[in-house]
Length: 267
Image (cartoon, rainbow, N blue to C red):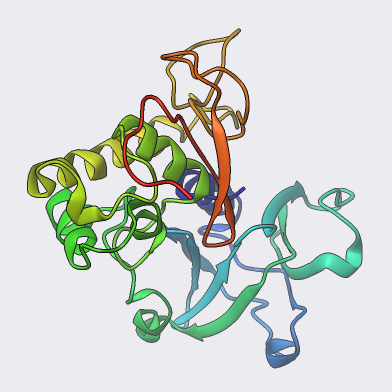
């Protein structure tokens, strides 16, 4: 499930494979941009912004993509067989003399002017893994609608960019509040919300790079041991108190919490 840390790693792989090299192959398999040709343009950089990816090319063009639930970018040696899925799921191909980047099942793929990137990502709140990260601004965004459930507020990328459903459940557990607790009902929200925002940034930062090795961990427990406190652990014992972890939907997404460690309303 792509979240901010996954997108950050994807951007790093794409940047390492493409940046500074001219494209020898360009194929955008979406109707609106099927005739666009980036061949010959040099990739300047590939930058993550929350859950969005921005691949910038000389000439002032940016390829904007979003992975959502199922999308993925894979990088292969030039000439190697692609193994990211069937060919009909391919939405984008960017190749250099050394590597081929293939985008599978991308629900959002658009070619825009680099000067117009704000039209695609300007609505996002501070990026948990970006240079604009500001926990106080993120906390103020979360508190702007005090009646909103904490879980929904954390997922709203306009408040802070990068949190997905896994981190939502984990952060609510660490905050000892159910995901249905109104933001304004938290104990001392002006002090609590910056701590939650800072905890979110620490968790995502700890799960990027070689340290993560594709394994998302919030518990700090090494192998062997559970990687997550509550997410995906329905009916299993809470790691802190032993009570069975519960599961219910919030805004159409599976959500997990401990009925003993977390206080607040539940479905």
